[in-house]
Length: 291
View (cartoon, helix red, strand yellow):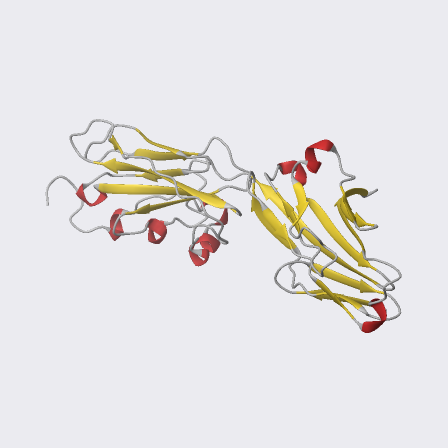
């Protein structure tokens, strides 16, 4: 008998002629986690009376499964003959451990600390006595976006064109950039795909503004995000300020998906250029030096 259940924390496979041992943890296929943090991989279990025999103890094992044409099965952590064992490599031995001091008391959950990119894999918990149950959880470890740098390219003067540029030096791809203005949002100015190619920069994180006018004065915030975090920086456009006033950079990092609230309808109008927005004078009122 083989049963698969997928819920919100892992993937479960139960096997055996009878389901006497059960792992009582919901799951999800893939979990994205930030580098450097810790995660609890749950594996609480229960049993039916036929497994509650005094003549043998629980046998528990956690394995790391690396994907590929020939998957690698690396034992990480175990409980056998009333003892906790650490069969994994030295680096992982320092970072793994059972949550419970006695995992045979129906909780084989494991903690993995100081997550590294190399920890991306499927983790398999197997609990057996007379019968057996297995839980599989796949985790992907990613690096949060670094604190981005925002700056202005071009001279701030009426009628000029400038480029606002946003760049995060590190972070696991894909990184998604999004510009917004205090009190407004430039998605309404997104050009169509036919308008973009002759005039749009292809650098992610660029916001091009043409025909500068008073309506463009304000603070612009760039957010850059991926599956495990979002970071921000800002610049301010002011006339008479030369190349502009660079705002105070700030960072807020958290796990959220989608991380930056992309306007999907606008993105669908011009998929390759969702981060390269152009102003449209027809959408502005009283634009120019003489109001």
